Image (cartoon, rainbow, N blue to C red; front, top):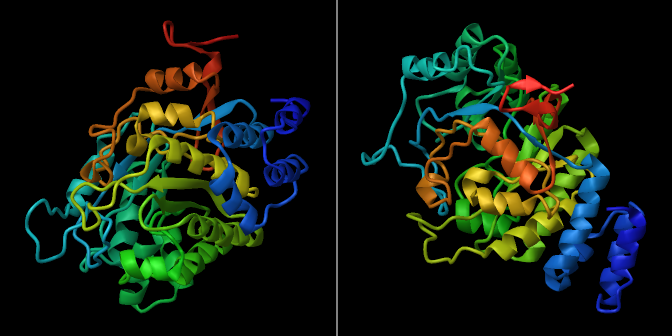
Length: 388
């Protein structure tokens, strides 16, 4: 969308004056204040937010939408923490549906992808009391022996805080050990909502907001990029979402180490917050749009399609999203156990590319840090040839 056309949209008489001012600030690349972010949630209708978010997205990444070829390893769902929203974890004393993979089983999962063009392995799971820092460091070293070329994105800040505490090392020392053994980056999980009162209500016993931010800042300082997430649609209010994004935006100003921002929808199946209704698809799209508008120093906004479903993910591409992850062969259970739209999340490369093209976007296969691997506007799937 050209700048002139978006100005015409926001000069429309039905847009309230305060929203027009926000739109002008965005067009002029002026940073929004927290209260303006809240106002977008409260007053912005879906069409307005989508148009403005799409404008921001086009300015940052043009028509491109990214995905990658990755696979997930979840070593265990046994966890010492008791997050109220979690349908996935099991306490140590629980038997039903609990698992803890052996080292041999984990390495076999990596062997299963030998010869396949995956570029990333994503390792997250429960916080098991017997799987510590040095165990995982050695595991990563062995993964890199099998696949020296693969990018290892591993361990949420929640896992890392516990590992370092148990090993009696600083965050910097713990992350250095993991990096020296082959870990390349961090995922963004465990952030939930940074507001301390909300955190006390939904996940009181795990790492604090300050610890999450400190661990990611330390990783960035060591040259390990990371992602950032936000769990929305439960007991939080709009001001809590904006506060969360504001803290991330401030850290990104300082380190420039975040690759992408990933809003994660609360799913209410089989957890301690099942009495809370899930928000609508309209709220999902509004949240993506406000995130894209407010997070001005994040290059990318991701919609994780196995969680929200491929149809909503496709819609999100018109609301500021420029990445739908990949998980082309995804074994993750974290969201399927919570009632996600995709219970067996698999898409072939061709299906993923077509999903993006049908939304009028330009599909790009990327690596973890957004280097282009394949431009799929230049691939003919019938002949599997690159077009000249």
